[in-house]
Image (cartoon, rainbow, N blue to C red; front, side, top):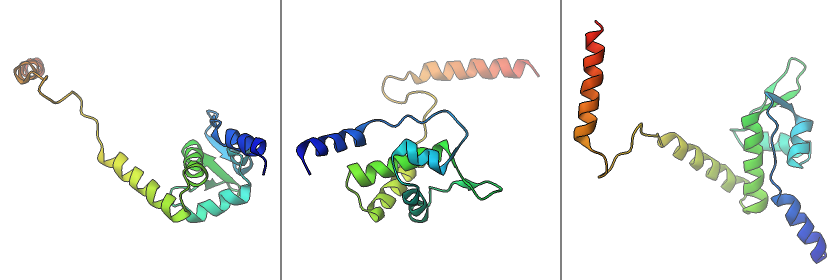
Length: 133
């Protein structure tokens, strides 16, 4: 393969995929968006548990936006990052685990937080709420 073909192939892989704001996508739309054959998407459904498009009453696969995002992520892991299917499956599982275990705190915790100030604010809220009863 010539250097020019390699460069254009790499450039086409690296272009960002813009997912339209729709509820459902047919398999052909997802294949076009992600520049993948439909048979690859059907195969990936058997290999990646998080890729579960719903089926319409006619049996047509209907991908949700999060399914399309999963396809984009799987494609990146396999084609750009060099993961095997088994390795990509493990990587996705780890990413989901870490997303679930991280929860945002409603306010920052650390040495800069004035606990006395927070206690005072909470007492004022409690006073307002108890005055309503």
